[in-house]
Image (cartoon, rainbow, N blue to C red):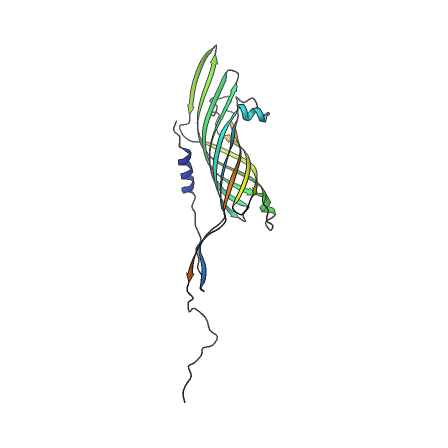
Length: 253
């Protein structure tokens, strides 16, 4: 399988996001902030990815779906707010597993996804003048994923095993929502659910009428909010002042 590791994907994501600190100085002395970084957050979360497709049987039974057609997953999200802490752009790396069984066919898949998406904090968008520890977020975006699927078919007591690997990253689009609660200015807890549509019908290695496969990601996590990072230096007062009058030296008679 031509895959990338979760560690490599996370490193690529962090390098791909350009951080541009703003620098400035003042004309009068004191402790002057010269580097300022704001509006960033990092979220680490874990949960389950669940399968929806031609071989799924428990789409309406959440408990059985999680037990029989899901697998463990985890992800990391890096976000930069671009408008009043209410609208942001995010990059995510997700790794998860899914499985399914129908009639005489069963399969299991491992996948890694990387994406970009836009996020809207509805509470901050409509109540920007007030501080709210609790918030509701919606998001949507697209990206690529790679997967490895192993399928087992039973035919007259004989087992036939096949494997499907992605040769190139496949496209995925998704949307979702979540809630968060800020414990303090730097930390918060989150809960999210998203629906992701594969742009092919091969995730379960079972093609039927070209119906696209889906998977969901249900997670809880913790966020770290990078409010402000500053460096200061002492700045000596200079003589760039405008005086209303100039004192002349005394003259002797």
